[in-house]
Length: 633
Image (cartoon, rainbow, N blue to C red; front, side, top):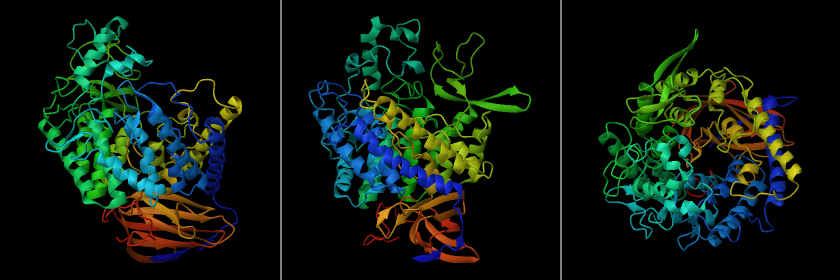
């Protein structure tokens, strides 16, 4: 292992370094207050109530603390990990005690009984973050195997048809895919105003004059009948998120069966996409027929005619990232890239002022018909009807598209970077500013501003994003003061809406990573740090890090030690040691490395800036810690 030493002293650390450590400390204290105020004496959440019967909401509880292990893995206090473990175990118990209309609990054998991978993806972010935070924890490792086993060919759940390489239902889980019954939502507050109705309903071939007729409370039975006919069985692109569950198991075990599952399932969806003329279909029936559930290749659950690209793009992007990580072949990125390019090609150029042209890109596909619904910011006809052209509609700029960001960071292709700049520049928004309003639940929204920083266009971004995150923490602390106890209304969102931990800036700045794709992606990073003295993940106490540039050759990063004594940092290439440092330039030295890690010794009051040349995706990825016995390249 190559060893380097910090050689630049300072009288005062950089502002970004001070703010990083302050944010970490403030959040650690806030977590203690949060658990004391909003959880029971054993860390148990107050939702679901003991008499609750339902299907939805378990993921929302997990979202209230899913990112605590991630902040610990970046160098946060032990409290992040300890409290997260306690709340998760209590949440599992509560879920296992909560009934569903199907005669079994909401959580069966520690996994949700039958849900879609929009929600399962959200809840399992905790599972993946624990792999980064506690890879030696036997319970974490056992759950990784157990959860993946639900989707193997021999699983009792019946989720996966290995012969046809398909998942047998849009909703699946520990009880399999056959407990999907949309009429059970009758007992949920959604009722006939079903959750995605605001996006415009997918079907134009029913007996109503307009699609919105299906939302009339008098037609509620017909609504659920249609949902059960067209959305309750077969495979959908969101199920590609299951590749993260398999990749997680591989990172713990190194067993090839998980790698093979990912590549085979991704290949099946690529074949369907090719068969469908290059556009991914949003529903496949259990025989493998494209459009065999919804009646067309569009109109499926979470498909092109509902949330559109926002939902359809999740699966191909997550799955391609996972396949590249496991196989090292960036050709898999052609899968999501091809879909994004189809949308761009179908776009409409609009001149909105004398100096700024933009392209409005479609997000949805369906038959011609009534599209009157709340679609703010999209192109419309003269009568206010949403513009429809050749099947495509909901034309609008791609603002802060996370899939395009992930595509470029994985490929490091100049063509992908140019596409990303075009998408950014087609919006009139000023990307050299940070929004200090409360962060959305995704922890996303500033990827384009971060890229402006990496391009040298937003010099003070590190200070601005950390200050914004700190402002969000202060808002949550103020809410704790205001409520001074358990809130009057406790619903499935009550923890998520009060979570005082905001990790976005730390992830970008310390690891060179975007927010993991929120509905089920793994963290994909340029760097990761470890504390060899305490033998734990993350930056040592008093040490801060800043990734200053990312390009196809490698990264430039700075480490700062403001602690009262010498610190040693192991810097790893990639979140899972999937990359190699080829050389590291430090001061007037260029050191040959050819290894996934380097060790940097930082005397108190010093910093070190390094320019690292990298070979990406050349190593077998692993959660194993750098000092683990038997770890090799």
